[in-house]
Image (cartoon, rainbow, N blue to C red; front, side, top):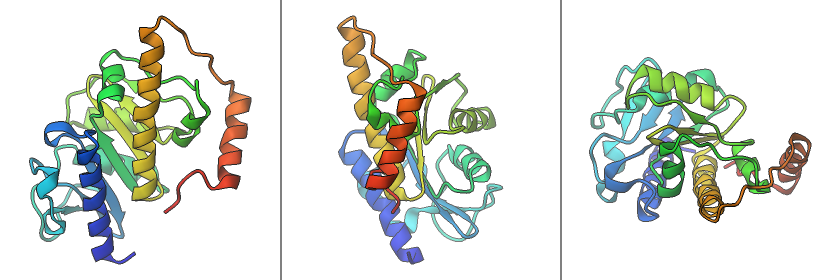
Length: 215
């Protein structure tokens, strides 16, 4: 993918999240790895107004590249994940309503449905840290160990992938699963959780059927 196409795709994903109501009031952020670091959405810009030239280019140490606006306050979290997970090529951070409700209750999402395989297994909820801090970044990295998504307590969702398309798909599925889990809790029901062996089988079948998005 050319640098111009990468920028266009990042803007398109951010705007799709906004249109779906998953990043209310300019919240959340999206990034994509580059050869020298990563591109990330800027701070305080409504996604409907976002253009490719506004994206901030950063190195993993936080040093700015050329052009763009001030980066999202969560750039440390993105940098930490890219540093810890070489296979991750894109990150989507949302404040999607259902998953954020669970995060504000300190609840993760158990493996009650096979589609949680998109996240790599049950979705952990990590302890609260102030937004934009290195503590939040470290917690996000821990929450993502062996996973492609984590909840951040009293905050939101972080999803990762081998591409922007993949990270976007994980973020959407986490919100879907969160809604289903909340519906069970509201009805006073406890989910029937898939065991590790079955979850491993589902993940393997997804690989065979191409259900895990790659590009």
